[in-house]
Length: 461
Image (cartoon, rainbow, N blue to C red; front, side, top):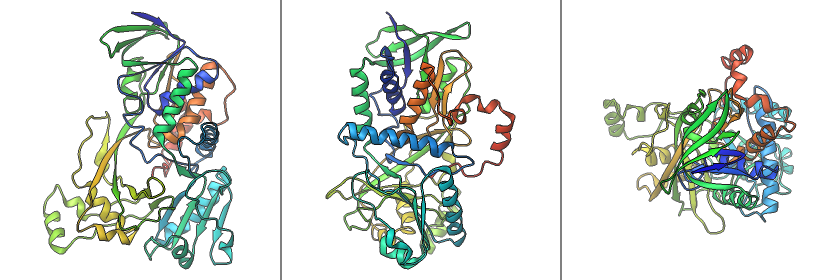
């Protein structure tokens, strides 16, 4: 069976759906979206569904890119009557370390310069009179920039559930979360109404002749083989982007990290239901009894449980009104890195208890759950990323072959601007100033490769 399409997109996660939507809005209506899974079911529905414009350097590209993405999210929330429940609770970074507190001051000043918004530093009650706590819902009329608290009394007043040894809290404000599933389905419905076709199936091969894409071969889910003649092929395959790129003869510098999350019911009401996404910026060592510590240390497979674990454990409340669900995440295993994504996901039997024990350092009230863990739900997916944790968005060396991938753990928040960028490139429209920062050919620049050697923080939580 043969078809013709102006653009073929591989992958019906949030990146692929948003790309189809962006192309259709710009008049490219004959778009075919291909996936052998139901839309949004591989990794797009496994995240914390959060967004932020708070990113490290070394330049302003990610801040400008995310500001554009958030602009689009807010426009879509308005257009859909906030179908996907966008909020602006913020991200709350906390530390008990004087060195990290000092870094917050530096980071906040740099973020302000890069376009993340004004920073308000609260060193006393007089400074804090302008602080506006997060609203439970909504996104309009909320503060931007950040509020940096450097006074323990103020921290206890506004973030009472945090540990008493926390000496600094950075509340980044143009941040929050949404229902990623509802966002994706709204975009898919809009795209279909504009002429986009969803074809259930698997991309088997891409015919490249004369250095340009000619057609795409698909094994459709109904058992038939379909050949689609097309001049444009967009790789939005998420954790499988590397393998899909190889079908066009292109090598992508990607790897994947397994990230899990755990959900439980906070029946004791420990976590403030109005808080944002809260991150502990301190490394830590788990508390165990003497016997437990000795047993773990004696076994090479469990010794890591007694050793220092990295910073970045985070949580957020899920749902509204009377909901008690809390989501918790901690990427504490460097061994979770894979060159190729593996399904089903590898299991980690320690994850629920390790995360709960680690979370006690952030929110001591959670210690009440440690001795008898509540029922939990675990899911997760892969963060597919580049070395510097910036996405790959744009053309490849093969004519007509584009990539929209490496949206490492920030796919939902980045998809709007990433999709727009692909659509602008495909249609030959004017491009934003940040676009070279995400192209694949940036790695061909010796100066860029030298910069990578001293890159520093990657912006991964």
